[in-house]
Image 1: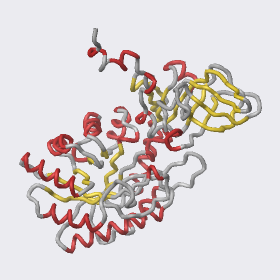
Image 2 (image 1 turned 120 degrees about the vertical axis):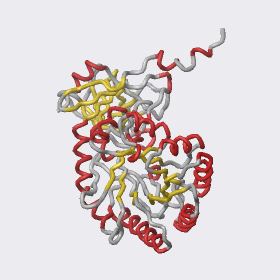
Image 3 (image 1 turned 90 degrees about the vertical axis):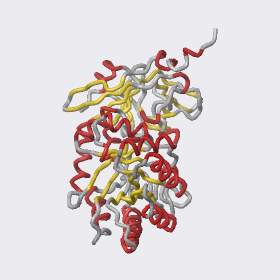
Length: 403
């Protein structure tokens, strides 16, 4: 049991709390599921990029899936070896590509023919050979939220299969490109197995067709997206997930790369916020708290659900309430029509499943400092990011003030 009252008293609110022991269990369960084959779990740093969290996964043996050169540097700083780091993302700048090649990471995931040309040109300038993987778009409906669907032609990610084949031939014939892998990722928060199996089968067939023209790849990158339970979702067991992928790879000697993010960290994270007061507008009930959309934007952005826990025993009938924050936007809410007992100034609410896409998507809107972050490991708490102060927020602007 996490003592949220103690943590709120010690570190103040709003506050992010991460249970590293939970994250260890999730990592080990997924690693065990793929033990029958050569595999690399590459933690998707965008889910939760706190250096202490990334270092925790590094110590478990994880690699890193990065979508900016900043994330690549975070991974290296946290102790993840360069040969376990992948660099993905649609819009890589020349300087990011250059630095990734110079850092000699495992490979760059290429998302378009134009990008392949830039990687080749930059590698040629450097006199190097860039290891690449191509992200293919299998055009499979992942049955998830449209904002986190990535495997359809209408999404911006990846290339169609015919384009990919041309790109592999180009890479094979280039002195400055080394095609080592193939990558697909159809979406996040996946709770149905069949789209994953279907996509893996399409991509495995692509690998076999490449083998037939003497292009042999080493890495079969299945992306991430394995869903978790926020409310009452039916989720996919790691074993079933692994078997669906392994089942389509018969005859292919490749290392499976998996890029879990949310699956590892989401349900190990909590967002703690303090009640400021209640407000009634006609028949509408609001619970105003000190956390806001700048701290946790998922409810406003995705209409995402987070279970809300009231810390301590509270008497009285539960009635629907909107949990809202101080940000000056009508879209600033953490929950809508959530059944809550009568609450008073100083009461604490905990939003569960906040360990992924929480703090990392935060902002300083309304000149609000971002929350502190705390980890719990073996029953002990420690601060891993200080709460931002006003001085932190103006540090990059103050010197430019004119008299």
